[in-house]
Image (cartoon, rainbow, N blue to C red; front, side, top):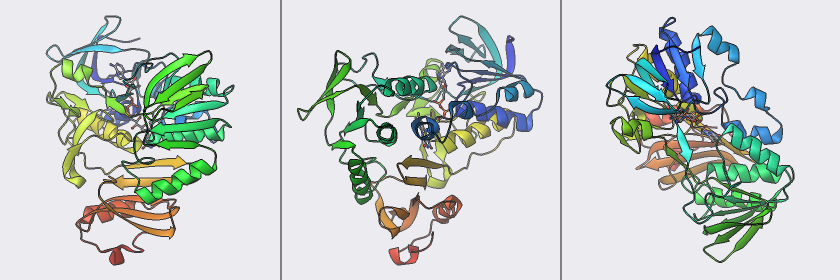
Amino acid sequence: MTQDRYDYVIVGAGLAGASAVEGIRQHDKQGSILLAGAEPQRPYNRPPLSKQLWTGKETLEKIFIHGAEFYERERVDLALATQIDAVDAGAREIRDRQGRRYRYGKLLLATGGSPRRLPIPGGGLDGLSYFRTYDDYVQLRRAAASAKTAVVIGGGFIGSEIAAALNMSGIEVSMVFPGPHLVDRVFPEPLARALQSGFAERGVQVLAGDRPVSITRSGMHFIVRTEKGRRLRADLAVAGIGITPNLTLAAQTGLQTGDGIVVNELLQTSDPDIYAAGDNAFFPYRSLGKAMRIEHWDHALNQGRCAGRNMAGAGETYDYMPFFFSDLFDFGYEAVGNVDASLETWADWQEENRTGVIYYLVDGVVQGVMLCNVWEKVDAARELIRARKRWTHATLRGMIR
Ligand SMILES: Cc1cc2nc3c(=O)[nH]c(=O)nc-3n(C[C@H](O)[C@H](O)[C@H](O)COP(=O)(O)OP(=O)(O)OC[C@H]3O[C@@H](n4cnc5c(N)ncnc54)[C@H](O)[C@@H]3O)c2cc1C
């Protein structure tokens, strides 16, 4: 049963939204909470959708962030399959697609992001997967059971992970993407080339430097035509070309937006009773000294919690340095800080392109660190970044092992 007014309303029942509930309850055990989300499932973790679920290391029942009893225990009204269509900041209320209105004391927009669509003919074809949700996983997994071939469009995190997952499921995969190599915004070229060779050895055809220009269907198959004249025919087509933050509600109610919903250090938007957190928030990243948006799990978890605490009056500056992680076959890594491949990079390998640490530097100062098959060193990496000290390659060598 829902009510008309809540002390706290959270729009978006993803990781940031679910974490905000925890944050609120750290400071306010009594306040009423509504968590409304468009998806039919209660909040779940997305990372296993492109990794452990395919290898059998995880099962769908285990990916939920909280058990159903959590929401009961914390007295949270959970409105699933509920799309919120409007925020009226003046009246302090939201409206769902059915026209129901809920007033709020504090509001959190944790609306995350939506997959970018391919702006080409066939970009909206039925069955072309823009992989992001639980339902996308279920559909792709079902289709993969009888598929022999797949085209994966995109060479970033999601494209690479899905290509690896489908390959491990015995499917012949071709990947096509415009960049020069895999995950080109983050991986230094030598590492990317080595990983790409690993993909090729496992039978994944990696077509870098090309892009799809159209997608059509021929019987049961997809035909992907590319700029360089290739014609790729496959049973499955999956696109992972990034996301755009979901800003409609924020923009429509007049909040300041740019590459995300602009928030201050307390995670308040330009309306101090409305907060934003997670993939959709453009926030001041204190340790890096710049405002940005981050699309990673650990960030949504911690920023969501902080937003929840602040909605309940904590007044806490968000000063967390999130890490992110990924697995590509047997290459696993964690990264923290600014891991932009356009910075100077220096790798301290124990085993070349396999085990070691990559430093991202500006004038000798460490901005970001990628830990390749090196575990439990994220805190050490954070310390190096926070120190803002100047290093040489010689002094950095062996700093993290
Ligand atoms: C397949 C996959 C694998 C990933 N792997 C990794 C990884 O290995 N490492 C890593 O660090 N990160 C990974 N990520 C990224 C990570 O999952 C995201 O950063 C995180 O999910 C962001 O959480 P969020 O709550 O901000 O947004 P989301 O997870 O996008 O949740 C937002 C929710 O809000 C809902 N919503 C939006 N608008 C409305 C509305 N108007 N009304 C109601 N509900 C609305 C959406 O339906 C959605 O459920 C992965 C993401 C995907 C998709």
